[in-house]
Length: 305
Length: 305
Image (tube, rainbow over all chains, first blue to last red; front, side, top):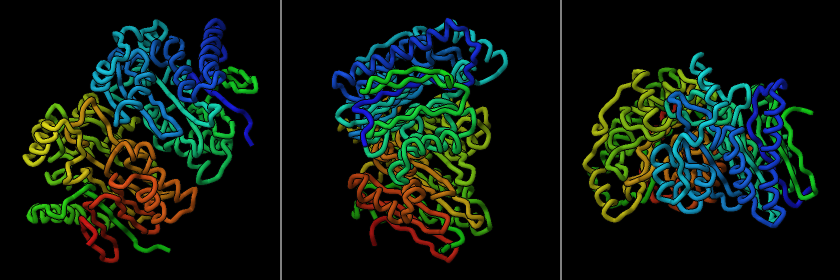
């Protein structure tokens, strides 16, 4: 039985988000989540596609320096920003992804363009930036992604020699999944990766099946957290498979992944299926998240309330 | 019921391999497949691990200029070689992968070292080469990978503006999957990618779940062919999921993927499960392949005989 005509879920990262976080910053996070949710919801409400909705929600968070994606991305070991993104269309199983790009203002827009214009799915590094330039996407200097809050995180991480997810502030990655009124699913994820990361490390975000997956036959999933854990379990596709092959409910598939397969503290994920069921599941102290649907539901949260 | 104590399957690429191929070259391919199969088999026969066996078989094909991996890798649009590799241990779900490296003599050895010494799973581009140097792996000049046969392929592709898999000679990628006497599974894949590829394109080979997957709970899989197709279907993990969640036989899971999910001509895959069942499945004109087991089976083939 269908529970809603359209649904949008978003996340802005999961981690050991302290309840002592400055209330002014908490308010910024909540406002950022609400704005992203609203941007995607407006599209779904006017009959737009799941693909347009997840892209709009992610663009909104990429442009917001609160979140570790686009502007406000964390710093790598060289004091630069390297961004990853992935988008997938559950109807066509079309997908596009970029890893380690440094000059594309909105990596999720580039992933969408790649998906729609190229036979290739994943481009990495300098070649990906070169492609984006030729494709006419908006480019910026790497310094555009700078944010003083992240810079201080990096200086601290560098001093202690740590490679960190987005500090205790969030295991930053942003993402969105949606079901549209036509019954199609889509997923999108974007990230700046881990603070002080080295050696061209690629996490789960741009890897189809790991951090991002959408397939009308099952569900759409976007993950956030310790990337390597989501990679080894091919987490997004594993949830899809549990639904399709194992005939599990979306809730059971997501909860099994988050509470049993992954380790406590690894992070979380969001998922939606064609019946309008949705999940915002995590095993960390908190997850920046939101959900809205055709029934009027509109909720953002960080911790268990 | 267990059909064999240990099993090794290998592939050296799939494609529109012409039956008119020069018999001297066909003999070289068969000799190369036999040598790789023997290298892995020797390890399994003396009680070695599946992981050591798949690595040894792949190293053997990386060192053989007949195959599109390591020495003999195809040329990218810049006339250089960019190599990808991935290895996975089905017992620990440990994995390591490299994308777009250009100075590592044996990319599969580097993937193994990364798996065993780093918290990261996937490194890409220059950072991956830098890591390998610091890890003490054997480095070579990019010219080491040169091969006159591939160079002629590239010149032809460049002239016609095509981006090709390894010509009509093979959709080159090499791989191995094994079950060892202790009951553990492993998979390894290595490739030079597509002739005349641009923009840092990454195929399915280094993507856990797409071109390579091993999990003792299900099976080990290594793929070869049109990388993007294997990515969108998360092919290796989909076969594992059909076995685990769908309780399908390995044969049914592999044949469904190759004959129904993928498109004709996309390529092929090899797989083995813990009962010693194995599959060498493809939907192209031919696939360089081999299988050996504890019962004395030892067979290499290119076409349907």
